[in-house]
Image (cartoon, rainbow, N blue to C red):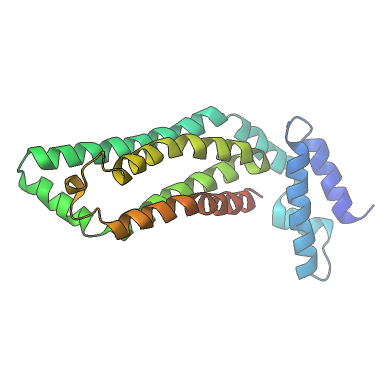
Length: 206
């Protein structure tokens, strides 16, 4: 038995309680192969130094189980809804009241549309990262489900705007043809960005 096989065997035994044990082992096996390609000799002690003792890894995964998937899912969904509600309230208030600080806030936000878009992309990258880091390979179905639920407000707002059900003048000078196309393309690319965050989170969980 090689040192790598010994390490994976002990890790498999330590993770016997976990329903996604096979996926976790596959992830660690891939990392061990990458490490073996970078180093001339990979000993059992070196694996423990780089990745941690199998029992310590199992304890970390045991702690992660206490973080339930629905809680994390609805946390991000509610944050996404809160962003839309906040934006809607800001828009309505801007058109109803002539408050100086409100006009300043509106003018500032409408002058940096790309910054708003990239901040929203970062929000979804963070979602993918947290799911990947917390649940590892088993978080992929959760990622897809959360993304679909979270996209509902986006798609509704986009359709209302594209078909002029929501007057474009409400969002002037933010809304124009170029910005609408950027939002459509950005929505299409949103899942790849989220997936990238998920993959990075998976690597950080190892």
